Structures are given as C-alpha cells and as structure tokens.
Length: 85
View 1: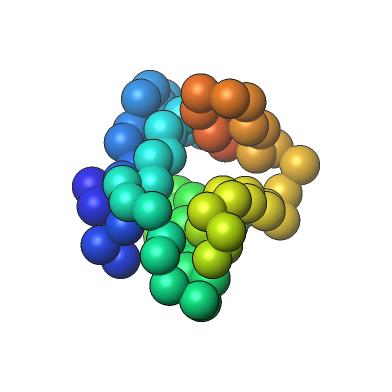
View 2: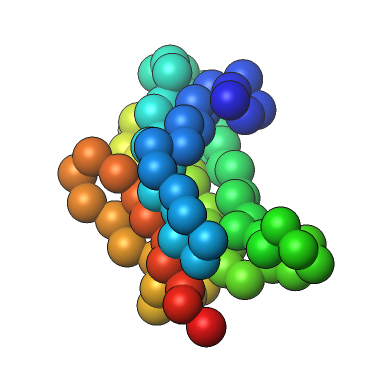
C-alpha cells in the first residue's frame, strides 16, 4: 500500500495480536519540509487503536520512526507490533 505518495507499507506477517510490516520511502524528499505519516494499529474486532507509529522523512532524507507503545519493535528491515493482551 502506498501512503501519501511517498511511503510504501507492506504487511510481511501477521496473526491475531501480532503484525509485522515493512516500510520503504519511495522517493527522495527534495523539499524543504519534513513529511510525515502516522500508522495506527487497530484491532479488527472493535477498531480500537492499540498503538501508533509516526514515520517522518526529513528534508535531509533521514527517516525517523517514533511510536507510543513498548510492544512496537524495529530493526533495519522491518517494524513489528505484538500485543498478547
């Protein structure tokens, strides 16, 4: 799925309570403004947001990922959310 015209998000793996996604910036940010997308991880049953993650590509082309939940993890290849509660 392409979001905001510059970010591709692909679901890599997922089961109830756990989702792993891959995030790719599709283009260089050649503007003077940062661009940002917020992902909300919701339950399918009640559509309640359980966690959110903000992905920013700065004007210097640095990608910054921030999140509001300790269950979100990142590494050099993927981003994951796992909540067993």
